[in-house]
Length: 496
Image (tube, rainbow, N blue to C red; front, side):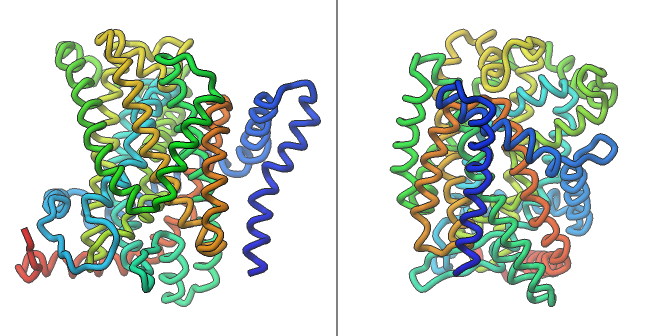
């Protein structure tokens, strides 16, 4: 019990120390300015030198993610391609056994995980990638998404394999459990425990940063174009709405997400496709611009390394492959087959990055708005849509709000599972209060600080998660081969 309170104090120490530093540096500023100063100090002075250590100009974490995705794809014999068709049959419910343990169907688990990935990363994140790294970043973002499908397969298979189901049927799973239990089976229990604790701390940070404050910040930027409401008023209203949903736990989150995500995707994708169809003659040139920019980038965008890094960073921020976060949602799916849930999960990077992100990128490139240095983030995408469909920013603002809302409720669950792993179920309400408070904070701080904080915490979740995946990859490969042997042999029950 003592170590739990030490961890709790450690989580509080960083913002408290930053507050003291901000007070010393800006004694005349108001409350919101000081709050923003805290984030700048945490991100620029403390986190960046450690978490974004570079090798040859490429952050170590980016190299780690790329190497891991390539390794998993080869080790699993390109499961991202050979299991693609089967994954759709699983999502459609053909293999759903009503007697299986769990809290979500395959479709609900996919929707809950997609609600955390399909969102502002696809709208604001793509715009940021194109503006900062140039159109060529989209090529590397797409490639990262394709290989990331296998990273997602590995982590979600492991989450199912090592999940814990209590007497009430409540499921706990994710990297915290397969790192500690899976590595213990390999005789590496101390390492597994350290990695599980490290992942949990980073996951809590990710849930409060990219899964919460970034979403609140960018949804306010979109909504404020329609309703001139102060950011602090918006933050209070959004915090109240989020609080109502997350109290209901994963079942309510899964129900809300399965209703919101498909409709949001359809509305957004249809509008983007309309723009592409009405400008069909410019699509080939836009694709050529993306390809040429990937291999012959301009120095203004950081050269080849700058474009490559931006593409990978934005892809991972959007689809979360390799981070282990989605594995927490997929652990709650009703199935006796861990591999089957991993196969469902590999669809996420495809839908999120290969489809939705590329559609957004083509709209941004075709309209040329990315060359305007005066706008950034979600406002850039809004401008791109508005340049063709004058009234669509109204719909887009609503979609951005719903995307952000669904992402936040899903990430609240991820962070909650990590929090309870460290501090126990009885401390769950403490996390929920902190999460709701951070909704308000995200609404009032500046975008630049949030992007840095989000990237650093999000990406570094991959260090402990993928290290565990490397060590356990032989187990996953053996389970995958066994699954396909039974599938091809016709011994696997089909219920629909």
